[in-house]
Each structure stands twice: as structure tokens, then as C-alpha cells.
Length: 212
Image (cartoon, one colour):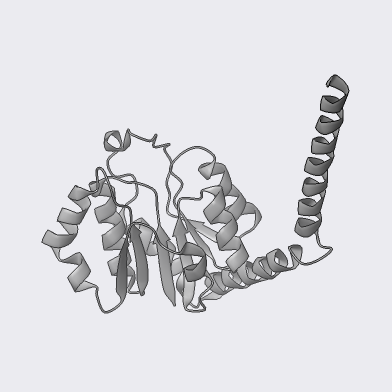
């Protein structure tokens, strides 16, 4: 099984811990690396350390944008390491994939609690402090490569806890698929939203006609 990793912008020091944790886990992985300002030190480390070359038989590095939903829905993907943004959270749940959580800021820590302690489909890497955008360098490394490796193995290993998490993730994925079918909860909510917008537009048109 393959792990998909898609995090927000992190420091080179923290990226090194992530990369070494992935390598030590022994599992195949797809690592999405952001491009743009501030990413040069990470690319320099990858090149000088030989990380990409060393892991090329089981690792794929994608620069920039990646088709996250398409990747998550592939049957080879067995885990998703994410910063717990709500879009990624919903996409992971809908795909029926267990999550490895690494929140950075905002509501991501609350989402992690939902995934790990309420839905029981995730394992955290131990991220504790909020890292504000633009202030990443102040925090350095908060998560060790061992914590990354341990979380991956806990989700991916074919032991009692890992099997339980994967089974629960698949169940929630099926529930999410049913919810968008005709007459089900998500489908009905979208219909109600459309009707409310239509009614609002009709009321506004009526008010404008009276003013004219």
C-alpha cells in the first residue's frame, strides 16, 4: 500500500524529519512538494542528500499541484498524511482512506480531534503548536522523523489497530458515497440550498419591480 503526503509549507528542518520518517517506514509513498518562494532550501537538501535518488524505487516526488482526489481514490493508496485542512479531510473520508494527521494552524487541530477521537480513522504525529503562515522559521522542527515513522506504521501495519482503523475508514467512505445519492442527506441539502437561492432571487426581483 502507498502513502500520499500533502502538507502545507514547512521549514527545511521539518521537511528533513518528514523525509527521513518516510524513508524509515519502508512503505511506498507519493510526496507532494510545494513550489514557489521559500522552497529552494528544500530542493537543495533533496539534491545534496540524495533523498529522491535513494528512494526512487518506492517513492514519487510531485512538485506543485497534484490531482489529490484522483490519487486518493486509487486502490493502491492505503494512507493519507495531511495537515487536516477541511477540504483534504473531506476528500480523505470520502475516499475511505485512513489518515495520518499533522495539523499546522487554524481549525486543523479541531479537525484532527474529530478524525482521531470521534471518527477513529486517524493517527496523529504529535503536532502541538500552531504555526502561523509566514512564521514557520520561528518553530523549526516540532515533529521528529521517528514520530512520522511510528504513525505511518500504526496505520499501515496489518495488526489489530491498523486493521480496525482501515475498516472504519472504508465504512465512512461508503457512508459518504451514499450521502450524495438521490434523496440522501447531502443531495437533499444541495437541493434545499439551490431552492433557497432561487427564492432569494425571486424576492429580490419582486422588490426591485415594486421600486421601479
